[in-house]
Image (tube, rainbow, N blue to C red; front, side, top):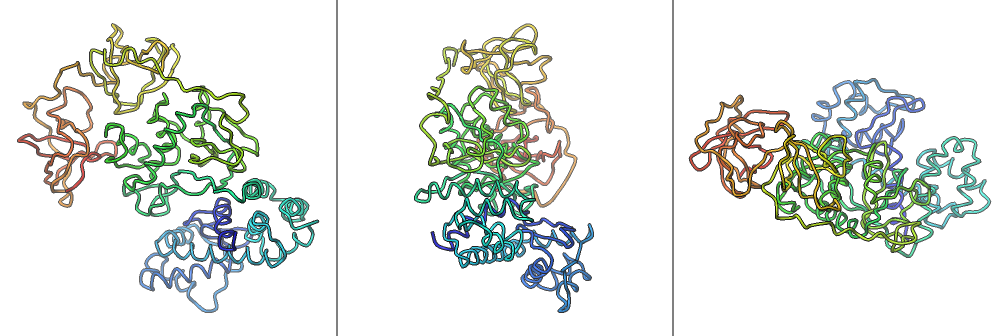
Length: 546
């Protein structure tokens, strides 16, 4: 492994312990720190000067303000003890998050990390894993710190340097980070002749934030496939059903390779809903995920019976309770990719999650620590196609073993998804086809008709005689022709998902026209459209401007 390759391996490990592009620490041990490697004091000043030069004076003044821009660009400025106010931190973050800011950080980060690795190598350390371990120390403490620890070590192996760091007067105080980095790089020693494990993940939007204002992947990195890295993780979740895990990983690969899917926390389930409404096909759908909704969606689409809800804080319990996952919290499983299996999940419960797409050096054909593999369940499909109608969920719903909320939950129906109804019970509950149950059916509530829209077999949705309400807003810029991205209902009332509200169903690929009128409902823009001589509202989520 050459120096460039070692630095590229070190970069994600170092990044995982530092900040994001727009991070600003107003007072980090006596001076401010900024950016994805948390450049401190005078290094932060050098970075900001490079960003200002790239953006130009006019734009830099606009973002930073005249006073801060003048201070950054003045020759005699020193940031050795400079701290930032809340307002200044906001302005610095805005500049750091620009395209120029990210590019400057990427370039400086690789320059710095390559320099750390070269310095450690010049001190006689040759093992790539040991060089990466010491590069992280140099990033945190400087060249003097790495030299001190190398001099004090009993040798120049990873284990010797790790032991030296544990006894160092300064770095013994930061052992959580040392332990995580040691565990992450230990795998490089154990599989230096093997390919790195790949993972799929959703990380950050096009602006370096979590908002995701523009649907889809604007940078090719919002949702992508990359090499495994240490966050560090505190849980590894192994799927005990190899067939299910492989299907989920295949779906993850499809989404990661499709730039129609990007990152957004506010719109974290729109990508999943778009795929469901596209016949559960990734190609042709568009929307956003965040890290947890992406991983959960892949398993739901692969056939796991859970509701489309959850986040990193409760994923472990959700998945383990299905009986199809085993959780590991030991360092061997969480600290490296050695035990990674395709479809395995690396989880940091406080913040992030990724899915493994390839196999680690110690992963067996069966579950780690298990005596035998768990055979995938084919499911009882005896009732498929024998229903009296279909029901489309208005919200995420539980599926239970019996027709009451006291019955055990065995899965969920996601908002917008349809189920086949076998019987409508007197209490408003539906008996539905559910291959995941051993009997082939289960129950879900539609009490008072509030949770599902039902259509009997052979029934045609829509009533062309219905008249829509008026739109509440106008914007000239949205007017024009649109194509439907799925079969789409035109409704009398925007956001009211009732059968009696449907004017007609518009087929996928049809052209409709909007004249600038719309109504916002719970953050969704409902366009007032015209199609085939009819007028009404349809959700903009399923309309693409021609």
